[in-house]
Image 1 (cartoon, rainbow, N blue to C red):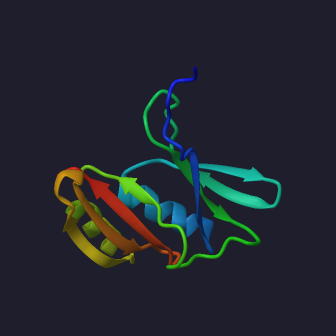
Image 2: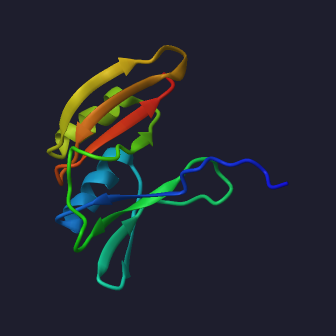
Length: 125
């Protein structure tokens, strides 16, 4: 019997301007994203740690990938939601939902990124 695992393995966040989106997320999350191209798609991959829990993904620019507030909502795990929202603002993003207490499930917030996507944050404190 296979070991249980979380069902989400990958996410893609659309970008109109990949360089701008890459700079935004690197500043906001304090991470380095790796540039890649797969056929006609330009991508900036979030770091991946194969033996760590959770999913990873990419920023993607190409036909059929349009930034939006509608549809699937990706939650990014952070240590400090308020500090992260401050960095969002510094890079031109907007807070859509401030830090909200979910009791035993921690805290969440929503923001608009540099491309016009609605993205969420999650932290336990």
